[in-house]
Image 1 (cartoon, helix red, strand yellow):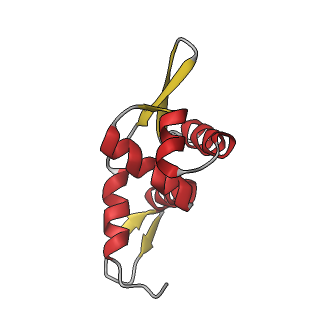
Image 2: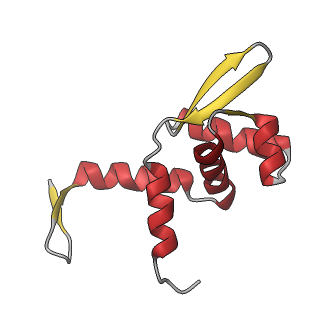
Length: 105
């Protein structure tokens, strides 16, 4: 099935659903900050992310686990630490494009 968008482009419903799923998953200021931090600094531990975002460990862990379960992040255990990284660096392009939008805030 296709959906015809007002700009004259037809997009498969499955692609639109995938885009909506990803956007819903990252649609939180803390999650966007985590993605931006990981993009700039590379693989990082929860404590490193907490230090940068000034958020509590429990909140960061909640967001990290959620994004990992939904396929946005990768996690690798090293001893007692878990190292998180971006699965898809293309997400940062989405954030950059959103920043260029002239929407009223």
